[in-house]
Length: 123
Length: 107
Image 1 (tube, each protein chain N blue to C red):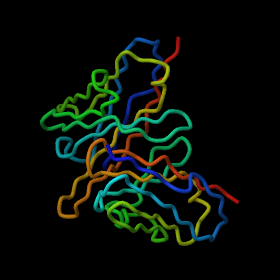
Image 2: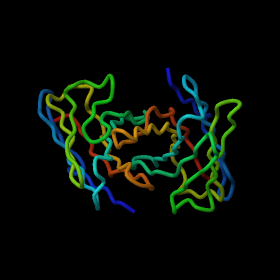
Image 3: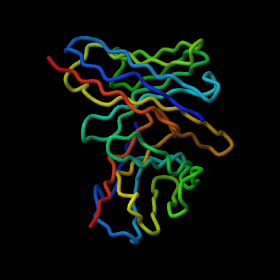
Image 4: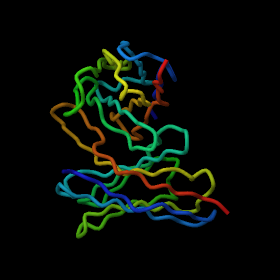
């Protein structure tokens, strides 16, 4: 079955960087974009950006421009999200998700999602 | 950027109740609207895509409707496993924003 498995929880100090991995299985990794979404404790879902695993092309939310980098290693079907200059407000669970696009339905959606990676930023 | 709003922000309901959640976009998004269910400590789960298409494996008591700017998620007969938070998401253009969520809890 299609599955995304993310790396484990991280604790970082303010100013540091974190790199979260997302390993895909059960489908052709290069066929679908990977999106990243984060969720602070008790808060809603915040879209961060997308990456095309085939081309490596990316698109980031304005809020994260200059601080986020999304990359991939196609040989191991793994996507990465690196966030730099961490601050306490970046403490959140970070999710990767497969973006399915069906042009004939004029639709695209996220499914499945990874299990989430908790990143804690604390001095 | 397209802004998404949801109402209500929370509701209390009983098993067997019919529940309706509304989502509104700040501009027309055609049918590029998805609904997700999230339970505590879990990743969001896709329920409805393209405004009204039921994701495979999702119970038929869930349904979606709407187009343009106004959308609705309906649970025809609330079950114990449906107590969760529900998010709408626009996938018309980036940034693919989410609504603030609607928490459904037990009355």
